[in-house]
Length: 124
Image 1: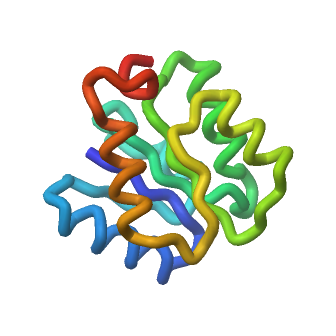
Image 2: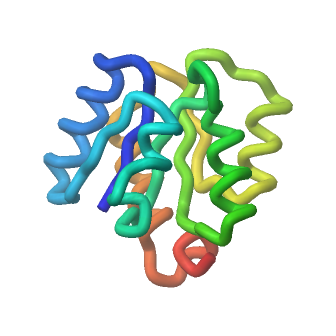
């Protein structure tokens, strides 16, 4: 199951459509908090999340999940490229850090990498 977290409904819907078209089960969330309250948290195989969201950011979500023992691949998307944020995400184990609007083929490659059985991200 792929969890998509983005406060922008149009980005959330477009990403949902693309990922579903690849045959994945997808759940979408408008906020990190909504995802954390979800019963689907423990079913997640990969998170695709916006970096900047109200309240809890994608980076804060990643740090929270790592601190609580939840280790699954993260793919970050952002409209605001800040090198420090990218470095933080990648250092914490993110598979990809993409700029909006991102190319669908690039996201597909990121998902393949994140979910590959022998990938570092998949083994965490």
